[in-house]
Length: 574
Image (cartoon, rainbow, N blue to C red; front, top):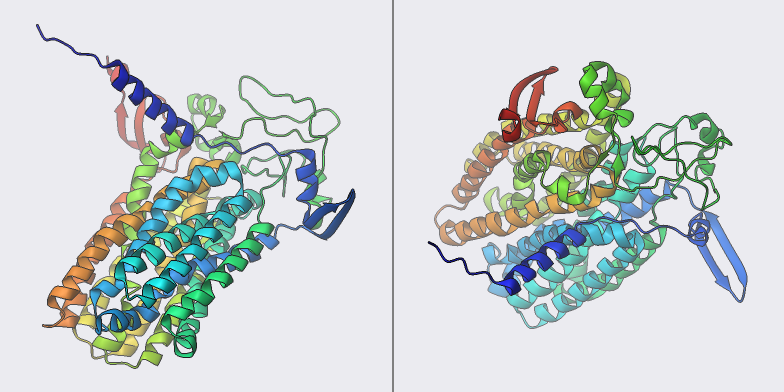
């Protein structure tokens, strides 16, 4: 007979930890007071001695500008490739030192971990407070980096730039995404593309700026100047960012993408009158069977009671004719997805692996391609900067154009929104997997730098297209209130790639660069290509059909409306 020893203390600690995790993963948007709703109708609003001052009515397009500018500052991490060789020569008297890239990889890794950890915090505390917090981390990181360079300390550089700047970029990278998805339920792909395009375009701004600052004030003093610039930028952008009021409607859709019958009422008010003020405490009518928010007799829009509610049939009503009778009954119920449920779903698992595969090249090769161009192809540093600027431009075009094309497919072809975003992934990953072997040959035989330029720019466009499609896909799959948190967890892929893959690249460069530098870079592109190709398998397994996703008795995967994989739960098999 076995003796079972119970530890009440250990059990209690375990329960407390689970409760803490559950509470942490609980995404709750705080309710807005009437005063806050009134204030957020204006860009500048303050009270002094009983007098209220209002300036510049807020319009949703202003979020594009705030997101774009803040993302440019966050994307300065991408421009490390411009000063990578300068840092290597400054610290180690070696422009090709693999250790010079270490702060970048740590920063990118920290960016992903921070975005995952702070996702629920951002949703619960709002975009303004969150962006200001990210500004504090960024300014502290620049100050620490300044002193670390003065002392020629690689450890200090990893702490200041890698940890603190990475934390600031991680928070502020995801802050604008959820607000734009909420304000633009009618153009989610386009809004997502604009939300992240500044990150890719930042290389155009900072590539030349870094070189000018290094020559004029020195490498260390450059970060002393960048700290206040980033801080002021994030403060102003945070002032603009906000979430919609509870009764927000645009083109007949609320922030969840649910259609309402009052579309004509709201649209008649015009573009600048989209925020309709209502009594903050009206009598709410809500059906217990479906949890739908209804409209009362005097045609006043009723605020959504539960922020987690997402109804997939109402949001994707074009699917209704494709569903069987039993499935219609099931899918008329609203799906209440918590963040915990999202992260435990098969869709998130395969999307995570897809994200990892699609961005391995971008994360690992971006800080290296200027060195490849100058050291392997023997081009000048000025031409290397031009290459970097071109990459950033094409990356940003991809971030905007590809999500926009998904919106076009939804409106013109009537595609399922999630399926349209998924197809963007399929096309971009397929093209990227086809081009990487060519890029490997070009690096192994560095005789044609112009072709290398073109291929690299096209790959940059494809990586950008995948980046732009991710936020809107997260919204379509997991609901608007989970978008920022889920996207933040996805960014931990960058942590895995940056820390794991970055260590592999740095080690290979330091070990083999003296023998054949081009062969080392080509070898790294080879294994990156294998990882990218695996993404085609993972993205195929991401289910976008609501019947499959919410199949009640197990796992179902359909192709052209017919189930090809059907695994029933154990209870159903008995």
